[in-house]
Image 1 (cartoon, rainbow, N blue to C red):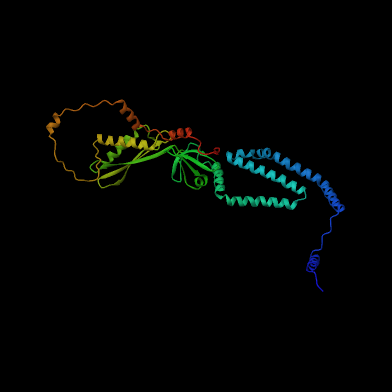
Image 2: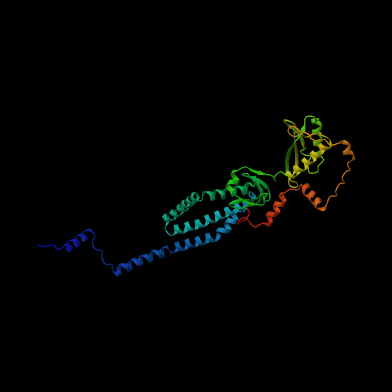
Length: 354
């Protein structure tokens, strides 16, 4: 007796998975009627939830403005106010979505959405750690305000005028006219030296005088010379101190204070060095260099020197006068850099936050 293999396989399949009953129009109509009945019963809740969600979206911005209004008394930072306003707006909108899902009988889904929102924020925080670090640093800089726009500061070995501070970076214009963008995290974590916070700045230089001079007299002459200059402040007073004893000179360290907003410390130091050297030369205060041997080959005749006609001094020309003005210029360079920064293009998109 032969057995049909196809028949055996079909019978085995029927035992494992019995055939599905054919759907009847009556069953389908019953299911559709049940769905409409449930939807009709949930329609008031869905309508109320949708209305609440739309209302929350519409009121998020005005309510956020109203809630952060008292913050103006404690912080003038525009960045903090914008961040707080957006944060409150997002919270209000999420509250509307949560209420809609709860009224739609999707409580578990609502909890999952809220949990997922926090998880996504945590993941994005790790993924964009550097961006988040710069943004948080910008908020702290905006609150604490260690410097202002147009201040001369030094950060991470870079000296310049503050041109712009955005949510990402601080832009300096150095004294070579270059735009330097420093990430706010670097600015916040490094030492900030503000040269504009206190306009009084001290400069110094060294002048060496010979041991054959009266050191006290040399100190008095140098102090009298720099004290008579209008660009040198009398409070704090200048000082002339013996710094060290060299091989051939006693080195005088000269300290002076200037208003850095009006004068350049480097230019004033150059001007004072020239004046001190001229004063020492007039008063026959020797300023020898390192000891060395000097050999005079031909000594000129003294009588010839007396009979030699003295050359006439040339009158200073207009070009020489301009050069003298340039040499004597002691004005501050910070104002020139500020003017150049105003004329230059915007270094980065975004508004200043301080």
